[in-house]
Image 1 (spheres, rainbow, N blue to C red):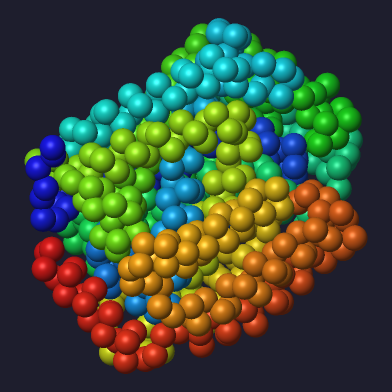
Image 2: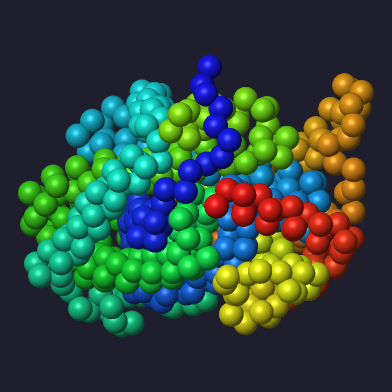
Length: 534
């Protein structure tokens, strides 16, 4: 039995957080997102990267305000408990867990899919789905990174910093090599080759189906490890800003290099028909086009190390979410077991098991990416709501960092979250709605069967969640075909409707809180816990 420690250790400094954020962003996304984004928006994908970074930074600063004020494990979920009760925390906690536990599966799937260049038996069909053998290898990879996490966060940060340098060097080196070797400037013009018109729908497609949002939201790991930050009040906002700005510049350069290196014949029918000789390994294919076979072999090594670093990071983060769930009695108390080095060992092992189930259910990278995006942004819809609520009900509370723009920016962040969930596609978010229903049903029925006290005593603060779900489902059914709808709502009318309705939903959400005195009392408890761990 692992020795039970009393608290997580504050071992992470400012640049350690920055390295974590960059490591989370520069994972498998750089190996696929430039290709998928180009298919959706062509040269306009550069605009989509900038839009995506702006949206992520707004959300990042919302997370930063909460994490700085309450630097505890799972801060956003625990603050949601304070503002909207245990019902909201239950829903958010497990959706967040589902999003995070899918990420190691995504990164390991990327490694195996790229490996199919030399080991073709690991994928099947034109869609490059994992074969049964490929799924087995992917599960073993997640297990390997789980074991590495047993050595503790201090060792993990040291190793991750070295991996981060490698992860940066390869995409930068590939981009420079492509820019110096093969660059077709006419690929960026709106005439001739670029036959597809640039529309808002193209940009939205690049953000969602193109994997831009999934790639850039990797910075979220910074907030997850707030309880292990040495100086969260100053270091967390700094890490969010530096990691996001650095990452978007990197991806813009990589996207430019990718588009410029494309052969004319591959886009002669328009960007939407873009095809490469190896769609399962787009950058290896593009390096072969540019006549750089040696660099292609180096890239193959990076296709293992780069996603591997992200897999290592997200296994650690998922384990800590399970730890936070147990702290709130949403998971068995055994999840609180820590090794002598402060690692939540049981939670990590459960993470491995759940990841294995996900790998067996979803055999393709883009399917996992969309599902992950929908789960994560659905789970953090309450973050900007909580920021607005604590500003209204606890105006004098200590907050080392404040989101610029106040309540208006909170409303923008909320609408952005709802839209991102919608853009992930109805076949991604609809199953999550079923998960929400199951979670709530279990929370109601289980105590009655056992004859114990209810897990949730007040469901009223969740009343705004029902119209939010209905809005997503109804617009999802009748919305644009690009997002899985019937196409009854033309163009971007579906997104416009959701954007407008989100303002009303946000107002309802910030007024559907627990009584003010209860909120203030719970926030005081969280501050006490955070101060005790300092």
